[in-house]
Image (cartoon, rainbow, N blue to C red; front, side, top):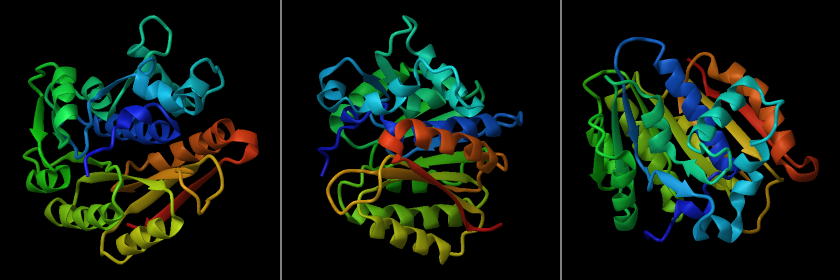
Length: 280
């Protein structure tokens, strides 16, 4: 199935969490002069018009980036995230939201590399246009999980892999987890960030248990919810599972996630979870 279009969801609360952690992780890796490689398994088109038909259909960005746009009490890491998004909106109006590829492209240095994978035939054309012939960037029109596995270990021996499937198919949970385990076997010192939705909680529990028994070390989980779990349709929470995270990430999220849960959760329904799934 290739019907998923992230443009319907761009800038929502899930993007806030995902891109907040992405920015903090890339910033941490950039503290050392040595080059690193960024791999995105499901890059999407890279750029989204929030005043376009897709985004305006459900207006999910209104309960995400839009709620943060004019606030002056942002935690430091959230303020850095909002400042970056504002850089893509020079008119000061929230009309554009960069996807993970453009955020990474903005943050990576001249000697770093970006390897972007996208299978959707329509999205790949938009992605190529968005990265605009940047020599640091290689775009693969391919299955991201298979392609990314073949790219490891990177020549730099330093890297971040973002795994962000659509989870349209229930098998995506197991496939993402199994591929992640294989990736760490090829490149044990890399940093991996696996995004997940909470639609049916038991699927997330199975994924967490699989990682806890996989033999992988140093695994942290960061989750943000806007309402309690439900058996109905729709995403009520999302999370990022990070392997070999920056040592500063947990403390940064301890300051950011309670605040985000309060601001983005309607009527006090928001919640967060910070958990070490596997120690070092």
